[in-house]
Image (cartoon, rainbow, N blue to C red; front, side):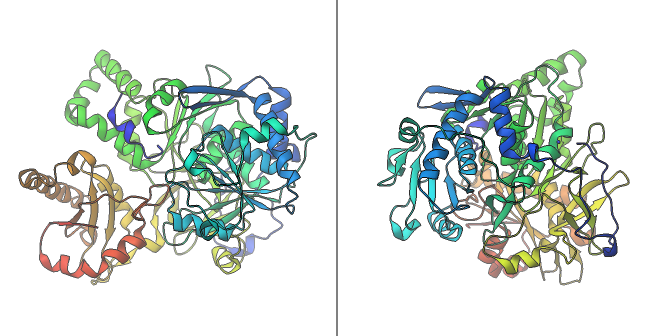
Length: 597
């Protein structure tokens, strides 16, 4: 297996794509978006249908302390119903918010089902958030209870941290994280009878509040309905297709379920297509967990796909690998070995989301024989774009879901309208109003283009664009994608507002970071960085070319608040921390500058 994997930090109706002009008179609230969704297709009816129709179908496989625990639909729903009965017995007001603070596990999804059946709203939280952020989100969410499981850090105790909450400890919750007075999941299962009947929830009721990762500032809680949640899964159905070898797909769930993409791809899709969900206990067991899953679908984010590739190049030079892949028989053997070592030997589909991924990365994985798809969505809109069968185009995130009217504003912004859009931000009416146009389209903040077949291409974030002192506008996202494919870098960000030319700040890839303190190695790295800078500049317009590159000697992490919980760079935080030094760096006339962040 490739050593990279052990450093993972956590590691559907086809409709015509609607390409509409920016004539606001063509839109009104009475216009239906996409095929009507019958009540029987909402999440809870789908859950009950799976329980009734496929009770013995495998659903979860969970490792815990060296043992494996398995659930089928029947056994999982027995536990969820018992927990739902306990929740109802607490007599909290209908529609109360209940937090889930845990790494991905079987109990996470069963808790979500239980919260919904009991008549309440689930509020997932990122386990990687620091104490101050968690405390702030708990208070803002007004949660009455919190399910606690495996965490990245010890849970801060006391009323001053989280306030007065009822705590429910998952079986994977470590002893130091079990709050005093909490009740255990196992105790609830043992003492309560299953909730009877099939409680229903309205399509437009709030199902969950999903907090944004906070790339540009404070996290905001997007209120998503039961209708919007299930449509996220149905929007991906054409792209996912049907497993040609068996009726049951397998997926390893390890990216945070607190994020919209994992929630839609794993939880919602399991209600639509037969899917066996495997979980990982953490970094020490990840390789074993991945091998056990024999996943047929694998979902990750661009940052990890890039690191996977870099790990391969650390073992075999890119040029040599290309030569081997070009030899007919040997090439097949090499491809198979690489894919197997990546843990993707039985994978029929790999997917990327969360951020734009460089085209070169997609091409590389396809060269290995993997079906690589890139989709698009936001916490506020759900998963709105994915390639239709036979219509994938490099550099494009695919066609719009039938439930997502998509248009490009005169300023180039991607705007989306439909039943997958959030109701608004929880307890923030002002930002909710600002997020939508007068005719109900969500302002994504992304600059994009739509081709003749309705496929969307993302150019960058409008708010990230800046103007140099020469009056030229620069879109940093496109430059960052060129840098991201280099084996030299782990993280990159491009700045230059008000300067004569843009520049990059980067963190070296781990193998190079280990060498950066040695003077001789640093000199060699500087030579490679200068060559990479020249190579990237040769692909850019003159006003986009980078003047220099700044190397952060310390990595950017969630803990130092320079990465979001989904591992995106916090551009605002980075700029606020370093902008006083920008002018001095430009005046230095150096091509490579070393700093501590």
